[in-house]
Image (cartoon, rainbow, N blue to C red; front, side):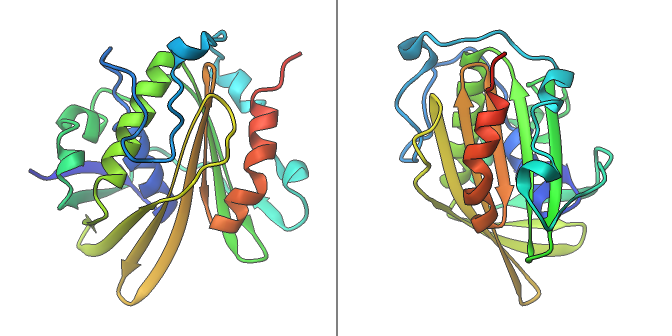
Length: 230
């Protein structure tokens, strides 16, 4: 089976593979098998804050002033993009065509996103989502499980083949649950490494993707702002 998703950039590919497969179904809540996810669950923590609206989430995104000198926000891009075919990853296939194609829309309806370039070479993207903790936990855990369950696979972006390898890495002990991995994209002799770390804190899910050093540098600040009260 071929799983089709829509993306337009490497970071867009990372986000699309993560988010279009988040399809909470009321099944058992679990962290990604063998990953750096916490073994805590919403039931363990009894920590399910009010769901935030998209405008509330947007106000909690990092801006240039939070990031420091050298960062420029990229214009928002319209949804959709190149037609991409994912090959050689049965774990992604098993998520089902509806989840993988996002035909029913994203399952986390409250969301906000910002992407930045850095003059020191690199990019970083922040995404915020809000939903019931059990839905965030289940959806995020299952997609990280699927992606790290495929250490190597390939996508076709239009007619361009891109080889992808994944590697689980430790996530900092922040929030209630956390997941992290490195993805290496190889195409036509060029190679790009992207780090993606997700932190769930109550009813808020933070995903920071991009150049590994930039993800590590800004993750804590992003979570602090995303979960600020008052």
